Image (cartoon, rainbow, N blue to C red):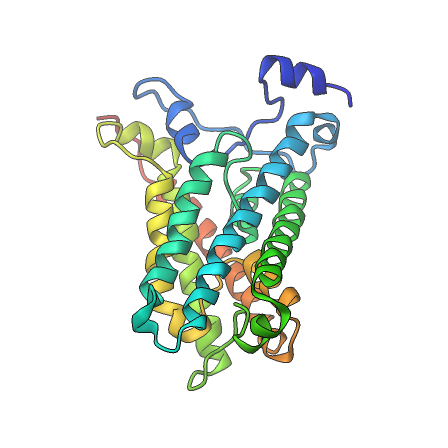
Length: 289
């Protein structure tokens, strides 16, 4: 493929992320100088000829695969026990989701930006941090990775046990309405994507450069806190790929009945976070410390 040898030999990325996540977000500028990343074009067909583009997609696939594998396996471990007190419980499930996001964002930030979530990708696209070409490619790879990750867990647990113990799909819990579930997903995803924007903002990094910040840490912690709050309501989606992968492998009515909530809610939450960041946060005057 044209450009592949050059990318590999030089370690170059011809089309870098406009909104890097993780350590790459803090290292792109020297000192306290502030540099506004240029907006991404809507379409960038030349990306399709670059190996770095496909390398980033592979990174998103692998990261989402590992994310679903660890988190769904944790959920199944809790479901396997007759008493949650004998397992890691809800707190452990929340830690597995938050901890994996922390680790995987850290690992993939310099390759793909470390999205691991179509809602995050959608929010960054709306803020013109990446092209539509890259956004669609990322979402496809994230969903494929999630399906494979959940499928491996089903293979480990066995079809009968996996099906009889819910298999990790998201659904609105009894006692809550669909509106409750939708609201929980909107607010939860807003918190996550808002944290992503804040932790990786070039202006904030320059203005508050005296404050050490490892971007994957607040992002992972936000995921952990949202799970603590909303697992009893929806099982916590805030990631359409996670919800889709678990629903496809579980493949029962319960997994599909409320599935639309776990796409509509996260996308609305991501859009609101992108709007809030662009209108409110980015409008703040820059004052270097």
